[in-house]
Length: 264
Image 1: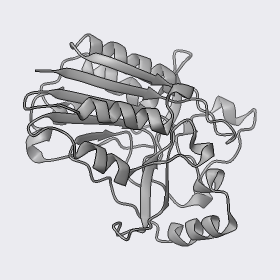
Image 2 (image 1 turned 180 degrees about the vertical axis):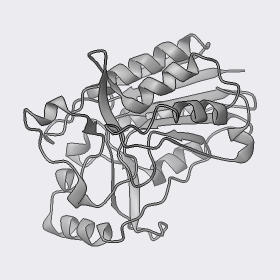
Image 3 (image 1 turned 30 degrees about the vertical axis):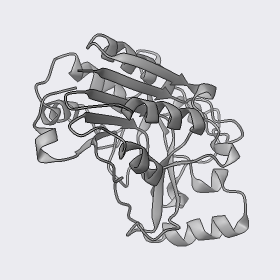
């Protein structure tokens, strides 16, 4: 039975003025934690985490998987959304992960992830750990360019669509959809541990002077205590979040069987 993982961490977002600090540490920390649990890990950090490379490694992760295999994908970086174009989203949004080359219009949409994960072998278990704002809020609440004072504060891992969309028509479409004011979670056959709810931000934080995602930091701390089920693990994480500084509520999405099953 195979144990394989892909861990992605992106701090550097060229051309966006929205760089992060703790995502590369997150990915390295997840890789270390998973290796101790017997996983073969592929790391994609900053410029290695292009859309093409993320798609290739995710496709390779599920290829040939079979019953009994455990597959893990961790993502730390910006999340965002663009207006839905194929009418399969009730809220009119396609949520997405933001690859390193998002400034070149390279998006990794929830539709893309659903297509990739459809290649997972029957009975293989897929765990997706997302420390990002993988679903957006209205753009008027999104952070702008960093000031020196803001660099000392927790940073939301949400990349406003207006940051990377290029045309006035695209931006106008985003503003129309933003007025809907709600989002839906992604649609892939996995157990998803998310750093926040659909309408919240996940935060870049610092612990003992070292940058980390607030969710990742506590998720790994609680993982070290060897919880028996994902539900037990998430319940323990929620004893640390939200806080007055990190206003995010971690969530666990998936089937009841997966939530109450064994850990990865």
